Image 1: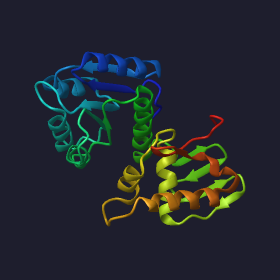
Image 2: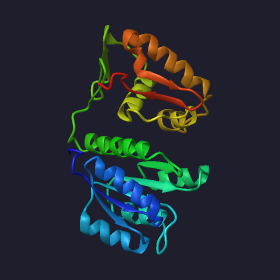
Image 3: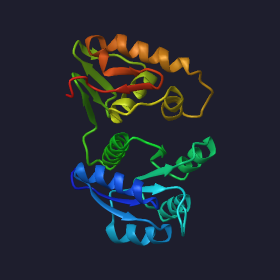
Image 4: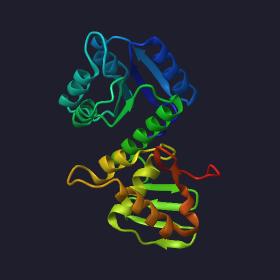
Length: 232
């Protein structure tokens, strides 16, 4: 699936936010349809058959959580991103457990939202076999199927979690993740893990990537991201 021209349905009742999101997504080549009432959202999704839905949690008519629940109950694998003004753990976990592919808290940067949209669409394409399972950032090539990594200095041997961390960050290229969110998305809930674990894995990743280690960037006071400084 090429992201250029992908159709997105935005379900958002705050006109200012809807207009901003629509503007940024349209400028990136997406085809955007906006719905302001949750009760109309399911019909619009059926009509448009979009590649992704962006759902506000709090909507008139039917809230985003219920819309997400109904889409998933129907067996729909459609990628869903949820927006919320609330930042509670309960809301976030509920949204993800219902099958949302990402969860963005207001206020958010429109550029970050666009980056997250692209990341969700890339993951969806890989899951359906429509996109090669190869990620490239600068001189680093990550083969997701073979779980192998090649960098400027040659092949790189990583532990399972180091690979998972690198693949997750590279698959969401340019997006900054806090240590807590990385623990959630990479380590999961199988056991408590100290946030210092993330720091130690990042340090090891940089060392093993050698001359290419700079793609794993620290964003002071926030967390980490993977990107190529030269835009490659």
